[in-house]
Image (tube, rainbow, N blue to C red; front, side):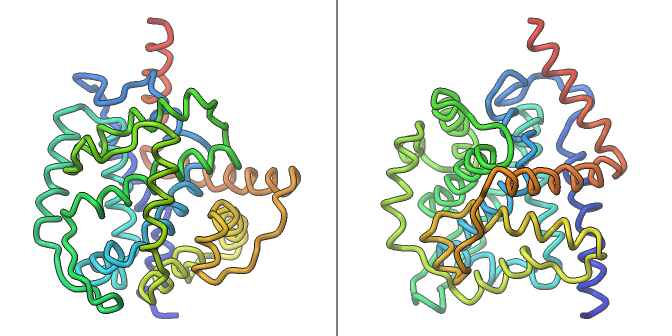
Length: 297
């Protein structure tokens, strides 16, 4: 293990926490695109969120053109934690930030995407990161993963709230440049979309390498490594069978109620570590106060 990989692993929680804090405003001028009464806020603050995030990345990486853009144009090998932190900051800003701040952040992402293009060495197909078809896969993987992780390890959404969540998140897709007509706005539409895209998916060497790092980051101390193994199990169990088979992982152990409880407890311990980072508790309190104010209204 190199000194660089050890430092990145030790820094994982700290940098992710700082990114999260940066996206939660102290005195917002407005409620943003979703607001404290939204299902989006409920999903984003769910205890299963870490597994939702890892699952989303694993699903997104299975699109060879999306993964080629990341592999050829980002520094994830040199600074994988930095890339994760940037993604966390963006999602927190879009979810909890003021509209103007969210729009600026999305505009920066769109400008970056304009320069990300190339040819996938696996499929020999050209790609552009600004392609709405690629952006849509990334969006759908994120939305679906939030619902799946909540159902397995957090608070399940009702059918009505699932539809409402998918519909609310249409605006997040629009912000990065996806035409509204392309975006699923219900659970049924989302499921149909995933079925249509499945024939285009595969596990490329870049996807396998990057996801292996996420599931088994080097350099974790013994206590965190033990927690992370439960989260790893939960993430693989949350994948659909076809995605897990693409990665070559064995069928997971049965998710009995006791096993689900163990994974939830691991998530709780990780969250306690997260809350110990500077600013996180205060950011959580700001969110809670806004939710309570919305409930009173």
